[in-house]
Length: 139
Image 1 (cartoon, rainbow, N blue to C red):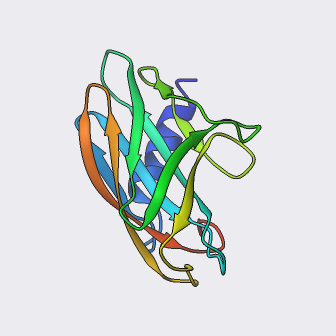
Image 2 (image 1 turned 180 degrees about the horizontal axis):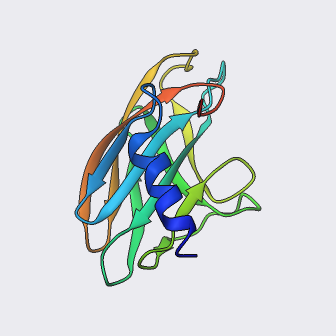
């Protein structure tokens, strides 16, 4: 695990120019992106790393352009929070844990930007911006 942490941090913080990162206290948030969609539902993906010595949780997402933002597990079932143990990266990704944005006020074409706020139990809230793309580019 200790070998993976420097690699994760490198990808998170040094990634390509198109990648972007944010921070809420000791929580690092890497490359938030959404799937472009002609409909009014999409999913938000990103990576999280808790660099503090104590656990935290992602407890909510505020998405002004959506009726609701739901944390979901691998089966698509709603969950109340996402645990963020110290030093363990968590990737929200297609087919895994993710954030579902329901009833967007408009479809999201490729390149559209979406402003959101992530809410953590201890680290507080942080405004982020996600871009509609086919997937993160890492090269």
